[in-house]
Picture 1 (cartoon, rainbow, N blue to C red):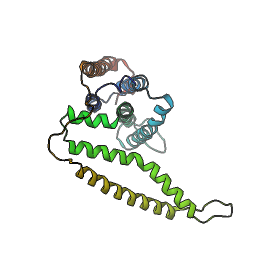
Picture 2 (picture 1 turned 45 degrees about the horizontal axis):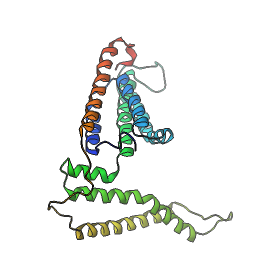
Picture 3 (picture 1 turned 135 degrees about the vertical axis):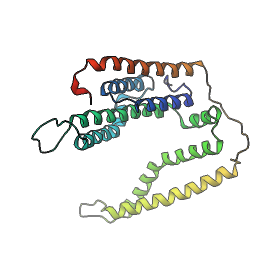
Picture 4 (picture 1 turned 45 degrees about the vertical axis):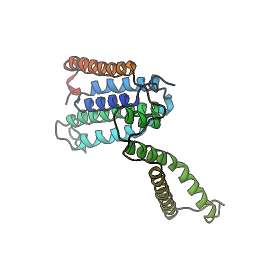
Length: 256
């Protein structure tokens, strides 16, 4: 068990939300880059996410970040970086786009660490126990999470069944196309709707109502969780403070 996995899920969710809101107030690329690098190290060491898995999980956020940089660099007004270029790229657009991209990267890497170190059941029990979330919503969310986790396996089974019945080409391989993918997607939709109906009936038949309920294996909450929250707040505040002091000393092209 990693160090973060032993901490209370509600506290980790609150810390993630707090850091995410704090990044919305920052527009300094250097400070955001420092937070992102700290997040990478923390997720790798404290959450126990392997390096390859961590880098793979960052690909969607990197792709989204590149899109933000390009959109802001090409559309935001400001001082052109290169005169006479076929497209107009502004300095303000590059800096602000980079800051927005780094915001997404900070939130993304912390979310990866949260998901990797938090079992869904412990999260729902902790939200019910400590955040006073209604069991009706908690268990419904847990059931929905398990259904989503089973979708890849169901898709693989449906695809395999369709490939068995697909006509063979000259090379002996099944011939597939967009129409076949559409039929597979429709089959997956039907299976998911039926599974959702069965799950809803099962939850209702087991007395999932507003009445008080007991908890099986409660999630602990102790001073170590408070130290985690205080430590994250102190680190983020320290990085932001250092960034505010160092920012005026950096070259002007880094600032919007």
